Length: 348
Image (cartoon, rainbow, N blue to C red; front, side, top):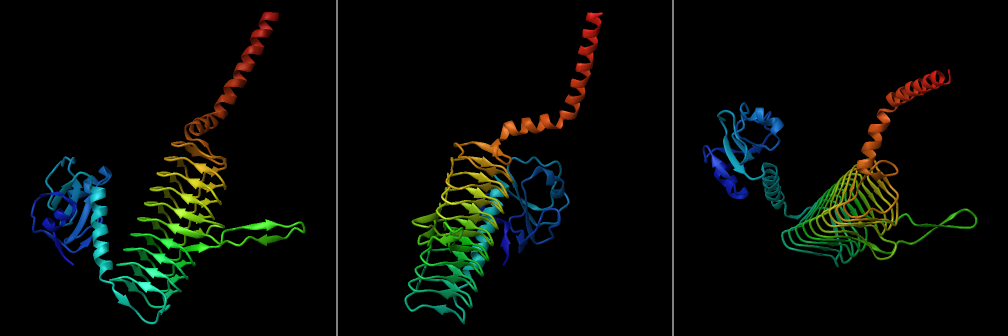
């Protein structure tokens, strides 16, 4: 599939410098792109490569002042990174739109319903009363349990398992191996030391424009719903427990674990390998640094780090002080020696 610079400009509202008819057929990193490829430059660290790259078309920031002529055709935009992301999204949409129809073998219950222009890959399973919306893509080996709802324009990648009664909104992407709606970790301790399972009869609700990475697990609620709000982005290998709520436009990095019934506000940023205990409230816009252990609720806008997690700025000060402890110990010893000497001279 080939595109000219002028066609690309229309997609990202850019301004051309150079040959509008310059064409590209694939993408490449600016430091190693070849003729016929499209690259972008957003990070000033890579500016040197723009003067030597063989890329045919390059997307750059409109504010970038070049130090010397460039052979490639340039497309200037307010934000090159965002424009490139938009272009990749449109390209991906064009590629996935080519997938339509139902491969064989599959199992689709007689009570299940599918929308228009859908794709269902081989060995997929659609249970009783399951619904798949228009333009959605269900890749091979996907399991959709009874009463599952998949909205419009959503993509469910290979090997995803979505248990009964769970709801997925529009424009949602769920990557391979993810499990939605497995039982929450609920066990009641008994007097004899054993544990009695608490049935998990709720579901998981994933709102619109959510993306969930590979091999992430989101447990169904004990009662009610575990909820991932619109626009949230979840990385690979995340564990979200029963009755958790993740706020809109919140981002969570890999290997994070969130315990049951914790409520996370909107616009929260959580670094990799963070752990959050249950029944907390994380306020809007809070920031949790990687590998932090959060055991108390956080107010809106709070930034924390460490385990147990505490105020980010205070933590940095403490780290700076701890690094200076050997020198401080030496100075204290010198002061003690000086004081003893002064006292001795005073007495004498």
